[in-house]
Structures are given as structure tokens and as C-alpha cells.
Length: 119
Length: 116
Image (tube, rainbow over all chains, first blue to last red; front, side):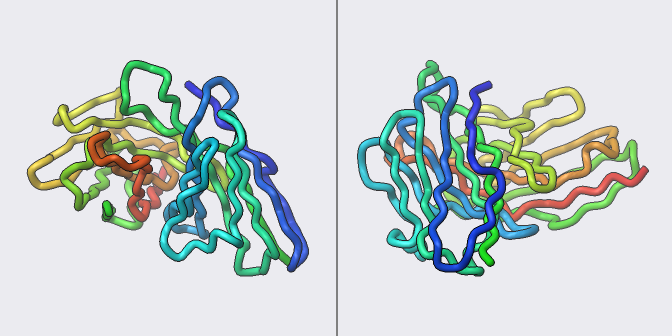
């Protein structure tokens, strides 16, 4: 199946600094990618939909100025957590779908996830 | 928007027994229903999916059933093994006619423990 690569897998940063997380589709083009946040023992909550060449669409309650999303190419989307605070500590995970096939309904492939710890 | 509810939140079974996890969805426009298995600290992995034009799908020990009228779908794992222990998530996605980016809406997850 298609491969989505996410980096870094773990990051520890100081409070007040910014952290950038990359999500790459390795063998397909992804015009749309999705960013999720997952708290321990909880479900994946959609944060935003990243659209190549246009602004991201954020879910209600997600601060767009805090979670900056850039989707500058068909294979790369980045999520930057700005001025991180301890409450931003979480597991962030991206996903993408390959629309190149004949079927419009295709599975979503997930990145490895990024464990962010803000100290 | 779509709302997906999943039960139970935890499930323990003896090795060799069957496990059933159930989900309901709210939007009748949803037409794709995947199930993911997630091990601790790892990415969700698709284990089976079903589209709305099918009522049942089976892949070895795993099966999924869909009842469109009742808007619920279930995951069935037979002959469970300790390596089946993980968190399982159901999800639903709206059809193309919805005009949205069609992201997945996830259930709350089920922690399955298979006891040896």
C-alpha cells in the first residue's frame, strides 16, 4: 500500500518554542492531508484538513494561529505548533489518501505519528 | 457533521473466543466504513473496510457487517489470539456527493485484551 512518512517521531521542546512536524506521501501525490491529535487512550480527533496550494481548513476549536499548516507541494504537509505549552503535549498524526486509482473511496494511510512533549 | 459511537470501550476475551465491537453512525450519507488497529504508540493500521453497497465482508478471522438502515456496523474477530490485543477504531466517511474533503470520523476506540 501507499506510504506516508511523518517526522520526527518524538520531540521534546521547551515551553514557548515552536515545533515543526512533517508529513510526506512517499509514493503518491496527496492533494489533501489530514492532521489528527490523539490524547492517551483516546480517539483520533481531526484538527485540520491540509489542502495543497490553498489554506487549511480547521475544525472548530482548533486555533489556526497556533497550529500552522503548510501544504506547499503534492507530497508534503507540515504542522507547526507555535509557542508550545505543556498542554500541547500529545500524539500528532497525519494521514493522506491516494486518489490516483479508479476507485474514489480509498483507504487512508497514516504517518507514524509524532509524540510531542513540551517541558 | 458525522458522529460515530463505539462500544464497548474495553473488551477482554479468552484466547480462541470471538470478539465483537459495534459502532453506530449518524449521517446516512456516509458510505465508507474502515476499521483500524492501533498498537501503543504506533500508527493506526487498516484491518478491514466495507462500503455501503455491501452488507458483509470477511478476511480470514476478521469480518465486518453493515446495516445501513439501522446505521450500524460491527467488527467480528474469531479465534482470537494474544497478538490481536490492541485498540480498535471504527470510522465513517461521507460520500463524494457531500462535497467535503471527506475526512474520517473516528469512534472512541475499544481496548481489546486477549487473555492467554
